[in-house]
Length: 121
View 1: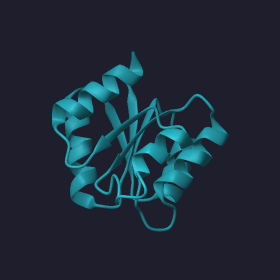
View 2 (view 1 turned 60 degrees about the vertical axis):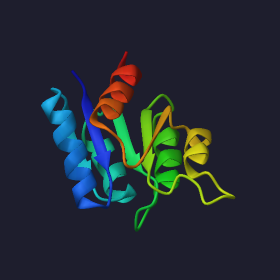
View 3 (view 1 turned 180 degrees about the vertical axis):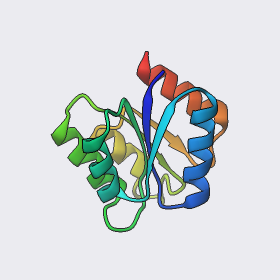
View 4 (view 1 turned 45 degrees about the horizontal axis):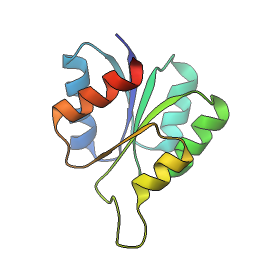
């Protein structure tokens, strides 16, 4: 069905996303930060990257930009619980950096699967 890279420093969120996607039949890889994500992206044939915005070492916006430099047509879904602080909307920035879709934490299983299916179709 598809190979998905899940990138999130929060173990519970990452594991939840991985289980949702694996149960739906996707092959899932995981990374805890942008540096690990870029390495996994180079080592695996990834169809979709689902990445958090706020992470240590290399945050999501920088990761999205680097993924786009390496493969301009990469399909990215950005997720964040800090969608905006009144002045900055980080998910909007993620779209500007190249995310095709965005999800605000907490999200429902149906939202995740719908976003992945739409991006793969």
